Image 1 (cartoon, one colour):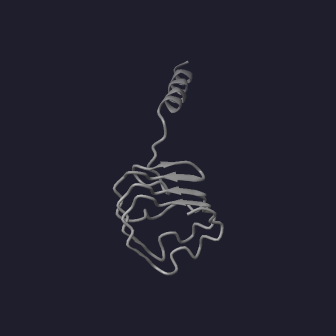
Image 2: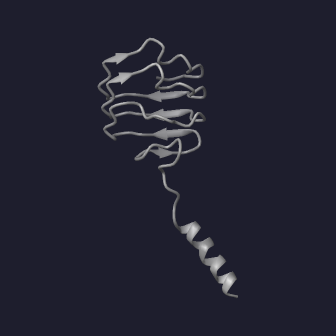
Image 3: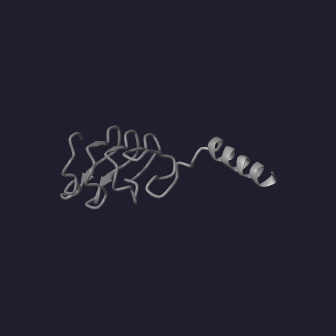
Length: 106
């Protein structure tokens, strides 16, 4: 009986406590799903590192990103939508978007 009660309590806690958003591939402060990453208004100065290669949408609007480097989007072969509005971008390296073969909207 005690084992069943413990199992029930643990199961209930798993349902009530939401998963954290900061996990591998999901930078702190961002909202993430399997195919989308939202990092708006976080005062980011650069593109976050270690992004999940499965994302299709990346929203970096309203940050303080100043530079886009050659490796910032490396490996994001499924990315279809990249949002960079309202940043302070002053330089973009030549091969920054080379891996983004599926990109439909920038």
